[in-house]
Every structure is written in structure tokens, then in C-alpha cells.
Length: 301
Length: 301
Image (cartoon, rainbow over all chains, first blue to last red; front, side, top):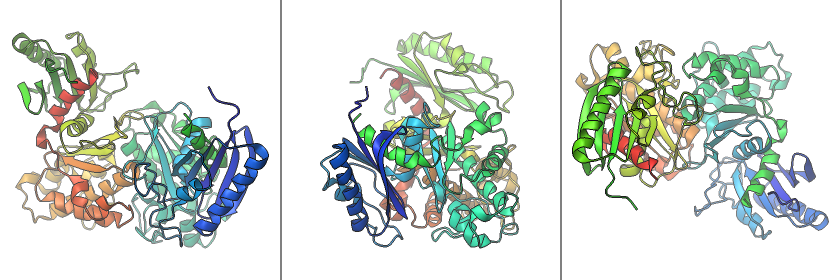
């Protein structure tokens, strides 16, 4: 039974902003704030101030869930648990973000990747309810994927890095070389928001639905979704993020993914109902922050 | 505690032969047989005869583990549980192979893919002992992968089909179009034993270590292993199968996989110890049949 007196703190830590919220779920968010991502010390200190201030008016929090950009260490038994791992983002490499929070709050704090957080949000209240194995993929400035497998968030060695999967790249059709500093033309290198802007000189939301950009975009994403389907065998793939939410894009992706799989995976959801296999988030752009609330909730279960 | 009086039956069901064994593990296989894969009725009937005969001399089995070629339905709550799904293999589509066994034996029977079976064998007695998340990839006539995720065999929607992942294919370096009837030049289409023989007119084991075949082979496999690493975040990848066991191939694969990942996954096992990340099976070519014994053992736990 859920204790209705509990109140949770959620943090969706992103590369440009941290969203913080206090509440218990989609119908009950009592306070929310956006804090710009600057240095770890400054950002986390503002996060702490927000929650302290809310505790003064709303009452004590029961737990905090922190879903953060990566790479990060989500393994509680690891010496670098709760730290940001080497990242090009200045000042964040090695930051002990969970430790900083924990020293301010004598509360259970749960920590995972931003995309595993969003996956959890969709599992708790969105389009992954009742599923055991699924993927949440965000396509925005960057591309990242979180997953549940057989009912548990996937970490494995560290955590997935689905955005960096290689895709076939026809240099005649698309001579753009890609923007990934590690891999050049991996999925993120070719299909992220940054890649779209670098290739076409304008942001995706200013390109018309018939622009060649969307054909390439759907093709690269569909290749990746086919790969994810072969490797992880998800029951559903949820696609969020600023680029991923482009209205006309989803049907293009569905059609091409089915084309790439070409009947090989013998399941009706792929063969006949691809529109229920590849879907937009049930929580729209709120999967991340609500997932952080759900992360907090889970620490007490 | 293990009941030392127990005796298990294991079946490794392959496309050309079914291996059956009675025992409890690597140090104790009491009987073993190879049965050619013909029709489901004939093959399973010979399997039944073998176990019945062994029960007469060795005593009653406690359980049977059946690790089989796919596609198959491994979900106990599904109406087609224990059946072979649509397959080009004549006569096997829809065969209720578990039902056929179950009607002959009043015993717990556990059923999974051949590659999940081999993964279990490596987890129980081989190089995946103590790991939570890992992949067993077989590269032989075909290519297939099984996986454990957070300590449990991965099924998801159905089961992974890792052999069919797309890879980059440079038609100038390798004009061979691939042999996969579904995808042409997916990994299996380009790197399976069948593909090697079709491309070079001879089997892999007759090609010298310096033959271009191995450079291509290592390259395609390394691309796939990088993809698997991004999607599933395994702690280890075990490579078995007739082609996969080619001695000089493993170091080529290790080197290229590390090259493809290019420092992106911040874990020492990939950055510095790739030879412990990508390994040959601890049970050599016995992962499959011993995994089937382990499957039987697990039904009683």
C-alpha cells in the first residue's frame, strides 16, 4: 500500500538544466523548478536550496530520486557510485553529485541515468505499464536509451550507451560526416539534434515535413531500432526527446523499422501492429521528471 | 544444497543434430548421444528412447533441460510455449517439441534457446560465473546470441536474434552480397560459416590465418560486439561456435572492437583489459550441452 503522507523529491539532471520537483506522481506535483546546469557545486547547491525551501512549506521529503545525464556510475557497491564519469562537459568529470546531495539530506537517495529514469516514469505511469522488457530512447541534442529487462532497469557493466550504435551511412545520399567526437557517424553523430543543425544549418523544428532531413533521420533511427530489437528483444520502444517528438517522424520510423526487420521477428506486434511497438511517451515530455519521482518512490519499496 | 542423488537430462537441439546427455555437470556426464535432426517426430522420438534407455540403467531423471534452435517460444504463459516458430527448416514450423517430450516424461522440463542454454552453462561452470549481465555469441553455420541480464536469461518480447544485427558493409572491400534470406548482408549474412564458404568457395578452417577472410570476419564481428556493448552493457562477451573458435580470430576481434568503441565506454575492462571482456568459452564446445543440464538443474531450484 502506498503511504499517502509521503512526499518525494525528483531531480532530472540534464546538460543544460536541472529540473527539480516535489510530489508523488503525475496528478500531484506540488512544486517545480528549473536550475541552469553550470558547475556541479553551484548547480547542486541550488538544487539543495530548492528542496530545503520546499520542505519548509510542504513538509519533510521521504526520499529523493536523481536521474542524471551521464556517463555516470549507478552501481551502489562501486567506489565511484554516484559520481559523474569522464565527460567532455567542463567541470563535471568525477563530480560526486550523489555525495553532495547526501551530505545535505539525511534521506534515501536513488540515482540512475536520465534515460533509465524516464523509462521508469513510463513504466510507472506511462506506456510501459505492465511491461517487463522495453526501451526508452530520447532523441534530442544527443541520443540516449534506457531500458528495463525482465522488470528491472538495465545497468550491466555500467549503463547502455544506445545513442552510439553504428548505423549504415551512405555517403552518396548523405555526405555529412557526423558530429560524434568519438565515432563520427554513429547514430548520435548522424541523427541527434546537433547533427541535424550542423548538416542543414537550421534546427529540426524549422525543417518542413517533406525535407530530405526527415527521410535520413527516420532511416538512421529505424536501423538503430532494428538493432535494439535484435539485441534486447524489447516488448516496446518508446521514443521521446525534442527531435524524437516531431509529429510526422514517428510513422516514418515505424514503417522503416518494420522494413528493416523484414518479417524476421515472428511477433504480431512487429508484423502487424508496429504502431504499438514504437510509440511516443505516455507522459509526453514529463517522463524524465516523473521518472525521478518514481525513482524516489522505489527506494522505499 | 544440491541433492547429489539427482540426475538430469540435457538436450542441445541443433539444426543438424540433437545432443542428449545424462548427468549433473562437467565432471559427471554418465551418458551421451548424438541424434541426427530429421523430422520433429522422428528426432524427438529418438531423444525419448535415449532417455528412457538411460533411466533403465542409471535411474530416474529429476528433470530435463532442453536448449533448442529457434525461433521458438520460451514463455511458459504463452499458448505456443515450447513450440518452434515459423522457420525455413522443413517440417519444424509449429512443432510442439516440449509437448512431445512432456507426453513421454512426467518430469519438469525447462526450455530455452540454444544460445541462452549455452549462456547458462557458462554462467554455471564457465567464464560467466559470478556475472550478472553477459552475452554468449555463437558463430558457426549461423550466428546467434544469448544473454543474461541482471542475473536472469533474457527473453523480452520473444528472444534476441543477435545474429541479424546490421553492420556496415563496404562493397568495394567486400563485394559479396551476403547470404541472409531476410536481410542479405546482416552480420549472419556476411560472417556466418555459410557466408564464408559462399564467399570464398571453401570452409573457414581451410583458409590460412593471413587470408583476407579473417580481416573481414573480425571487422564484422567487432562492429556487432560494439553494438551489443552499447545496447546491453554486458560485463563480458563469450564467443563460441565453430568459426568463433578459430584460434587466431579472437585477438583480431578484441583489437577491432576496442577500436570501434574508441574509449567511449569508460570501463577498465574495455579500455585496458579487452582480453577479459571478449573471451572464448570456459567450457569450450560443451557450453551448450552442459547448459542444457544446468537448465534441468534450475527447474528444481
